[in-house]
Image (tube, rainbow over all chains, first blue to last red):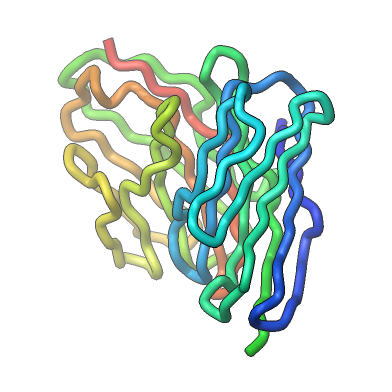
Amino acid sequence: SQQGEEDPQALSIQEGENATMNCSYKTSINNLQWYRQNSGRGLVHLILIRSNEREKPSGRLRVTLDTSKKSSSLLITASRAADTASYFCATDDNYGQNFVFGPGTRLSVLP
Amino acid sequence: DVKVTQSSRYLVKRTGEKVFLECVQDMDHENMFWYRQDPGLGLRLIYFSYDVKMKEKGDIPEGYSVSREKKERFSLILESASTNQTSMYLCASSPLGPETTFGSGTRLTVV
């Protein structure tokens, strides 16, 4: 059963705006990861955040994790057309097994 | 309603055996992917295919091969299984657009 669920399912913004995507999960986790997938390509790993971390930046990306709410957010600042892709979150269980993915958020950045 | 089906949920094989992991999708997608997933390493792309009889190497193709004789089926082959190939294997498919559907995964243990 899928544990990660991204929200919204689709998001359209103008270039230069910030984009925020959310992920909710159901059970306790060790790690949560965000991936990007461009059209027709494989997944690209973006950020891994551990359960004892609350925030992790990486360039224009910033991931937050709230284990009390079982949720995570991915923020993309100053978006570019090249950021147009699907974004997935993946979570593992307490045994480090069974990464499961949500359905993804389709982000469209319009020039 | 399962769209991407992986033939086995759990598999145990001996070192040196030839292993076939099967993946079938019923959405008429052009693209299919095989990933392996290891704790702390994220998802890594092994092979992908854009069309029938077409394949391309991903990031970690060594020790693997693939077969796509029909559009709906993408097989991952371990020619001679080794213990370092113990992992979770995920199959995915996507149309020419960005949406992706993942299978539930096959946990392979090589002893």
